[in-house]
Image (cartoon, rainbow, N blue to C red; front, side, top):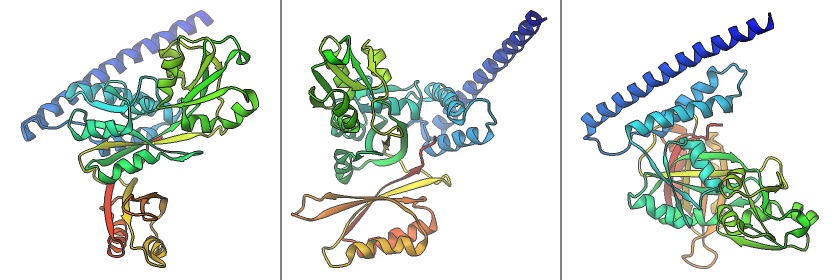
Length: 361
């Protein structure tokens, strides 16, 4: 009896798989048709990726989900289907902080799916230049970590760049100690990005207090550096472990279990409102008493949430600062527009860095 039930269940799965395959092929055909329609309208210029549309589709997927798969799982599956269909329309090239195996590369795949051409850059400023020059359609850069704060280099590059923020990615970060060494006691050097070393400081102090710590440009670079060494270890993710064939000597060594990094997606087109958006602005204020209070008051009076405010030296003169502010809502929203206009009236300078959909899961 149990064998009959098992065979029947497998037959139902086979039938569903066939239906799924047909529907995915049909979706891909429609995606190709959309590309042809767009080409007829605009001459085929530009890529077919639309951040607002993508975010709306993925949110709808999560809202329709009733299990047993999690919202994160079903949106990831749909993201890959959308990515493959989009590649039929116009394959995307996305620049990221390399080499291969970095968390930034993982953020690229989480946001765009695996059917894009992910191009590794050696520094954050190179990512900006690659997109500005048109050599890449988009760029993905880290901007802040939940335990170690902002990535200052990214904020500094936003000041003078003509690019806009067109999306964001929130990535749960789990650090692993990768090494060919047979045990922790045999490791003499740990290599990682400075922020990752900081995020694992307590664990390293407790488990490897006398080991040399070396900061490098990225965790992917750290894994690449130590892949042929027997007494060095890298802090990196599981992708780097698989890519460079480095065993995981210790897993999940981050000090905070909810460690999350936020990434920005950079592009050159405006993004329409979706109803769940963020607007990022850069503000420079006059050096007068009470100016910061006057800068923040309009948002409080309008009921617009300021989800983040960071200051960075402006480099114009000593003790002069730029403020980076994230507002809940889209610049097209009446309340957000009013707040920005009032801030601009008080500020020495204001630049809208981008209005974009909030990260989807």
